[in-house]
Every structure is written in C-alpha cells, then in structure tokens.
Length: 244
Image 1 (tube, rainbow, N blue to C red):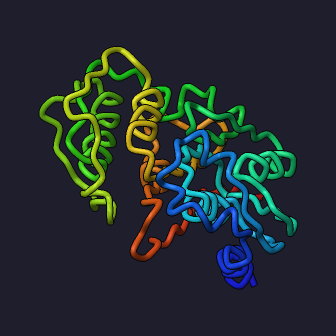
Image 2 (image 1 turned 135 degrees about the horizontal axis):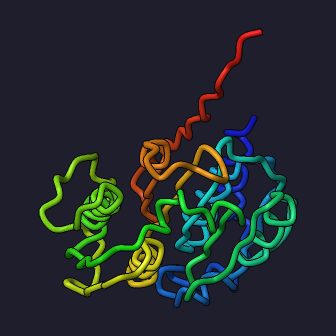
C-alpha cells in the first residue's frame, strides 16, 4: 500500500494549476523559491524515507536529513502545498524532529541526534577541498570523515564505495576550501552550491557511537532528477538480547 501511496503523490502533479505548469522547471528557480512553490497532491501514508524522496524529486528541493532508524511514518493530507508547508506538516507528526531552511536547503533532523557527539556530521574537518562534481565529492567526503574519526587528515585517503548515480555531471565550485569546520557545514555548502541532490543519513539511535559503521551503511545520496530513483533500504539497528 505504501508503494501505491507514493505513486499517488507523484501522479498528483498532473493536477497542478496552470500557474504551476508555466514554470519550465523548478530547477530554474532559486532554492528559496523552490521551497515556496505550491503544487496539488493526493493524500497518502508514507515513511519518512519516501516523503523525503517526494520532496526532493517532485519539488526539486535539496535536503539534508539526519534521522533515527527505524524511520517513522507520516500522513500527508490532500491539498495544495508548498514544500515548506509539507515539511511543517511532517514535523508536527514526527516526535523529536525539526526542520529549518539552511540557505534554501531543507535541513530535517532529530533534535537529540543533531547535537550528539557520535553524529558523523559533528566531526570537525581540518581541511577539505571541493572536487569538480557531486559524485566525487560524496566519495571523497565520506572517506574524509572516516579518516578524521581515525585520527588522520583527509589528504591521501583511500576512496571506496559506489558512485552515486547521475551526479557525475553535477558541478561544484572546484577547489573551494574548508578549514576547521564541521562535516555538516561542508555538506550543507555542497547542497547549496549545486542544489540538485539530497542526502539522508540514518543512525541506530539518538546517541550513536562515532566508530559505528551504521550511518555509513545508511547514507543515501540521490539526484533531484534521477533517471531511475535508487532504492533506499534503511537498516534497522540490531538490538541486544539478554538471557533470563
């Protein structure tokens, strides 16, 4: 049923007003304008994961989402809404979550998690340079965070992982430098500078361990204009069992 609900959300774009249709592309708008641009949608019950994908792919709003697994469900009522209004509706249903616009990027997060010392994005990056495109950035940046956690610097890190599809063509301001800032600040700057992708990172709890692989395994980066949306199977954290 969830899959049908998501399809209903996407199909509801067909019922947009003539004023909405006149925009050649939401991507031609500024990031702030994309947050305010309305469209009509059908009602649906969706997971937070699917909701984020809908905001990104339909409203063309870049997002940074810091969530706790298992990701919660929410109900989207039928109506005509901007992305800002839908995000307001979402946080009223998601206990402990807030969102704010970071220069036009929708930053949605669990309040306790965003402050946790075990959150990857709170790691202080000593120095980092933007590569030429978003795909390379994600690979290099994840490796940089991991290297920093282990007590090393970002230069000369070993790059592993799968390149996010569709993001090799998305440019970044090449060689823009960052010194002594949080990983979150670098990631938000990349989202603002390119404006054509979103990131969702899920953690095992609101107080994760910095050495845990869980958020790396549940880090999803998606283009706002994907040829085919990538599946986002967010793992559930393993619970310890105790004997009697």
